[in-house]
Length: 501
Image (cartoon, rainbow, N blue to C red; front, side, top):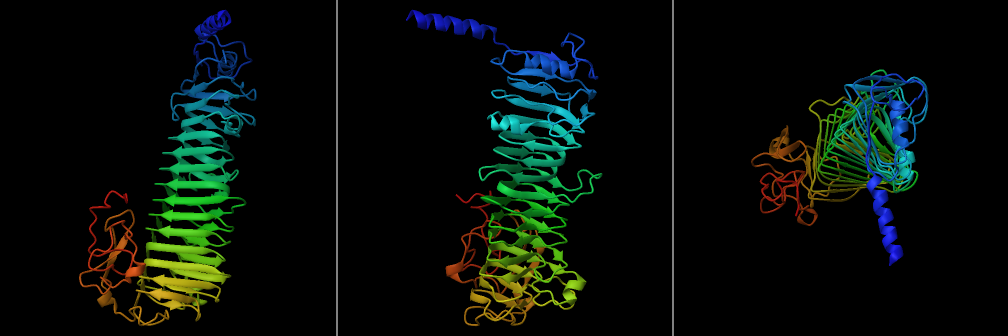
């Protein structure tokens, strides 16, 4: 009893001395350290003072003023306790390394780290999230501009309201980036590594001085991108170990390469828009498993022999549901060589599966001469195509035996897809199909709505009818489901908020 009382008194005495400290930086140069004194304290001296403070105390704060600080004496002190380095704002406070060193700010085990409100320039790894992360230390990056080097993060890291004009490397743990801009990124950790981006602009031209091709790479781990835009980039996905890619409500525009897998990556794409990409939108290969739903592919093209918007290869499975293809094509040179599948193409198949359900495919008004299959087409017999409740307003170009299961479809005009006439509608005129223009008809992506009296209304095969359309409106809108990606008479009341339960 007495020992417990003594221990409690000692803990109380120790706790009474635990306090947070604030260290105010008052000078912008980097002199030989001589203590953080009132009115005479450099950033280096403030970090050293914080490092000497009680490691059991609450968060210490280093306040950095507006202006440009030059670091000329190497790495700063490793701080053992929780630390917040607070600048005056990314447009006001600038910290510049004049020599290369690995870490600008970091804490040891037990010390949470926050770096807020500054521009970090000419650095190599300014916030060592890897060091902190392996020790289980959370890292917060808020209102920061990174310029001149690469940011490597690990552990539990949050990046908010920041601009990474270089490359972000996610090496380990769980990282979340929100309301920010990034030039390019790579996930290269373990199967448990997760990078989540929300409301992020990925722009390969964020740093105009960097002429290297911007990439979004997934080597090993999980990459989730939501409510974001990707532009001026390319995405090679090379999963070495367990890898997954998830895109939700992503705008993929003006990129010079497709979202591409070369190994067995699990890919899920929902409610996204792919437009004006010059080397396709999607490249599904390497044995991956893809599911695309609620998405639109508009005016993409490629200088290749198959797939103006999407190409499928190898033993890959590609499912496309409730999606719209409009205006996709080839370059003039590729078309003249007999390129196949202006919207969706395939080649080099070896057990590949292409499964299209409630898809609307519309060829462009003007197509370069020579294309074989202005909607769907490919080379070889290694792909098995299942086509259900879809509109092909264009032509198909593929070998016999590729199309296996088909029901509830419409081909307009002609009879090039090899559809079973007893299970599908063939050679329907464009006037009878009466598809409206590409427009905002509700939902997150543009669609082509069947007009009044359209032949697509109430003619889908009931067993293959999906419960909602591309806009997440309930099916059927009439007595039966409509063919194609959208229901002409759907009631959006139930699903107007985007939730299905």
